[in-house]
Amino acid sequence: MENTATTRTLTRARDNRMLGGVCAGIARRYGWKRRNVRLAFILSCVLPGPQFLLYAALWLVLPEEA
Image 1 (cartoon, rainbow, N blue to C red):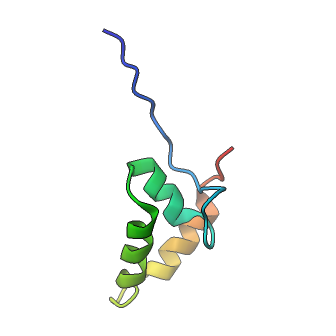
Image 2 (image 1 turned 45 degrees about the vertical axis):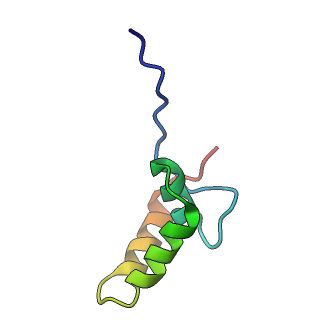
């Protein structure tokens, strides 16, 4: 039995990006809607924590998709 499932790596999206493509890349990787990932990020910014630093780190660390 052959495994035909494709494995997507986590990359920043080149299309449908609003800022750095991090949320769009996460949504694409996990099959979620971009709108929901962006909304979750925006809502998480109301909570205390390093959300902006995490986003900036992912922007720097994640490669842009080819």
